[in-house]
Length: 216
View 1: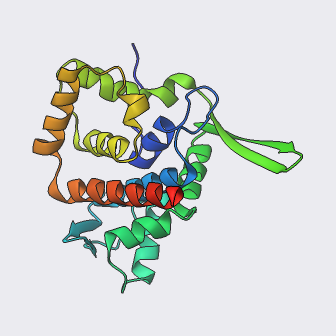
View 2 (view 1 turned 180 degrees about the vertical axis):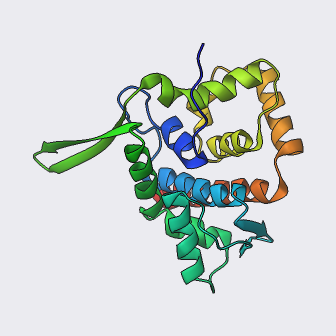
């Protein structure tokens, strides 16, 4: 089977969080925002623009990445240099900034199409995948590699970590057997770099807080 190219981390997570045919989101808006925010920060770590140390963000290279979405986040970090807590930035970017950046990037790439439906109570905007095979590939890729006992690369390890942190595993990993889940957790424990492990942990905590807030 022909495979699709690996997309930026946040794009992969966005597509994984939505139905690959109709584009229906499988997460609450709050959780989606937190996931997108963490994924964009993760992209900057993978670009070697940021380090994450002791719960704080350190900018190690202020050069633009060449990607508009990642560079927009880096520019924001540079403007707000006195704020460094990872959780604060995840929460700030989750207010709609991160989702908007990723939707725009996917739209520019022609991977999703913006659709607007008007109703009695206003308009509803959705982003429908242009190709269901491409949209479903990030989740399929991880399941396939784990099922074969293969090693995930670092971006896919972060993606898998964020899938777990946001609760998407209830949809994505439902077909993984106990052995597959054990292999995935073992890879995350042994091979995910410490700063990216911290990013996943901070995201999981932020999602937990958001869930508790909705229940209060």
